[in-house]
Image 1 (cartoon, helix red, strand yellow):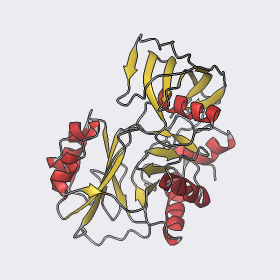
Image 2: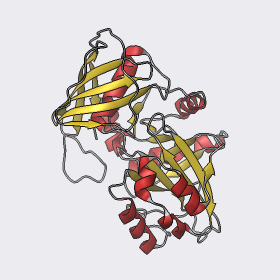
Image 3: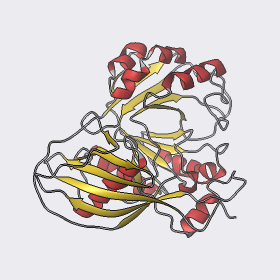
Image 4: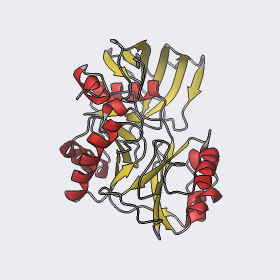
Length: 341
């Protein structure tokens, strides 16, 4: 059976630069069936779902529903729901957890503040506290969005749970169905595609040590997609795997070409040239697509380490919230390829 995931795999479509973007994730437990737009097509109160969708708009917060892996019979509303919030910007990364009988309490959150990395508003609304358990492994399993997420995601989530991965959850939507099984790991916010259980366990072990595994990585959700591709390219060139070592501090230009400045906490900086082109040949971007498309593909054209005295151009620039200090010099050029959803 041909699916969007098998076509993508057969074409060896690169994964880098394809992660969903969000500086902060808000996750609400909702067992039972999910529809395509799960916040308003599950057993969560529909009015609450609409209100939450409106509240997070343009705040940098992305909200999703989660449930434990397994069968999802309808047992009615759970008496107590797990809630998580995670901020993914380097230097400000955190993961908070809470339990609530009333998901309507989430509307008391100041979502603009949450998107900026202020966890106190989450703590106040739902009595949140620092999450002290295992990192979260969120596997997209919503077959109503795309059948690949159910066919490939649900077996992965079940295998992780059966093997004792305490942080394994199913999640409603991570984007990039054609890269199923797709996975988001918190607190750092790196997404993975075509995931397998042994790789996920390696990723989670790395997170516990503050490291990032590059195999299958789609990018960090804190960055826009040119930044995701640029950061992973610098990691590929330097071998840097410390999760908090790199930050995207400036993105100059606009589609189809950007210059992205990536900075290390030790002071080094790199200019990464990213170009967007259309992937060929045309293909279905999801199993539900009625027409063929050409997914936007990002080519990392060059990676150049900047001299200590050289400053990045500021034309058409966006500056990231976290910026390590500048320092020294070396130059390297590298070619990599990435795609965007």
